[in-house]
Image (cartoon, rainbow, N blue to C red; front, side):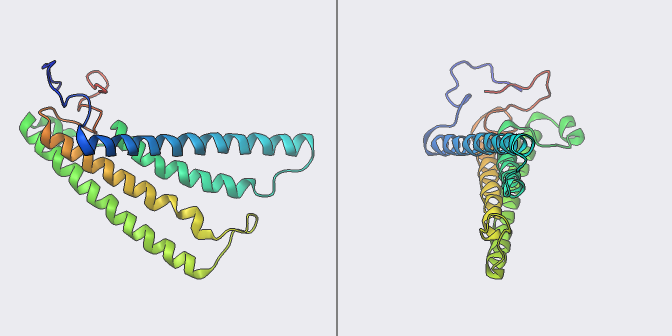
Length: 192
């Protein structure tokens, strides 16, 4: 369902503090994903060249890639939420009238946001217990808990993204899967 009102001020972006927050989360996600993918590619290429040309691979390459996979995964869940690309079970949702779909979308976004914030808290508790164990990575010799710091960051950013989606749906007349994507399927989804 797409708004036909060209004078709608809230159709393309969020305004005020929430718009600033949405933009900040978007930039953090973009940086984390770009940094992680580029560093992983560089690390892998350098390791392959070192192994086959110089007969020596980087001793820390596997650990670094493991850290980067965690970073990319948990930054990626927030990015997927922003793009409206998470799996959704919509058979019942699609049969409902627009007003009920709107209420359902707000409820779904709120519950998912709360779940992400709860997972963030559980991840922080887990990291605290891992930090107390004193374990270190064998090759990099850094504390193991450092590689898990991306997990609560990713959950928190995803929780913020779903909260912003709920707010967007409360204040806009259209139904949004995220702050930037109107509901629908590939034929009729619009990124704004």
